[in-house]
Image (tube, rainbow, N blue to C red; front, side, top):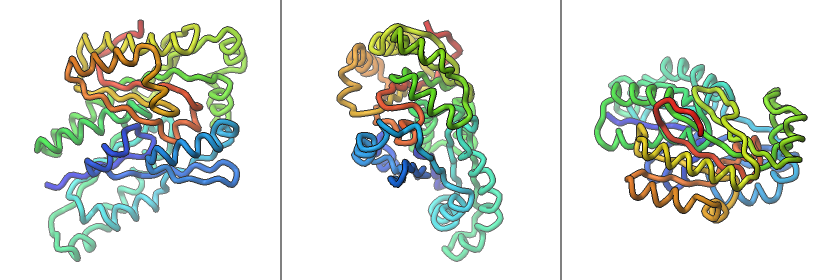
Length: 313
């Protein structure tokens, strides 16, 4: 059976990984004033757009995900012929309408695919499963890497589905933002009041950085640490602890809102890379998606992994 994997462009994985493993991308368009860019996970284009527009006016950005009609057209125009079963793994539905758009599109796709497949010489049925990753950014990549691994190993559709649904419940995303004012302003434009003006002002004045934790679609502070670099180092050290305890998949995804050279220079990151190599953990590092950067600001660090319940300490 030919199994396809589809993700949206908020999923932080390297472009070469996505292309090399035939992962299909649902791009999200970012508009800041007159500047428009469709996010196709092109790191050079993302960084150029970041330096030109996001730093000063990113909180004003409009992000436009694929519509129901665009998802339907993508599947009926290509995917229902290229594959027999497709898994569509979306950013958490608590933060984006992409999951709902994909679910709505799936009804039309499953109603209309038969004549298209028959014309291409396929008389077998086509199936589609939309899965809410219940996470975002680097953490969204955990399920994608596992789906690719299982597909390569010849796993069946039911095995993959059950595994992806299990991972969605056990994937953890941790983020350290640089600019609390930016995060607050951007959140307010989307109706999110989780970062108050008082918290942003106090955190900025005292240089207190929150470590935000996303799990099962809910995001909340897991800790507060003075200084960006100490907060990031604490996150990396904590991640090393989780690796030693044991992860549910041999995968760690890290993304950064800027040049990867800056990520690699952060305190504790070299040690994290060494621990991943010593423990056979596949490390995927990538520039954060343009969509991610306009939502949380440049310079943010995100770490994602799947693990049993735990507390940040």
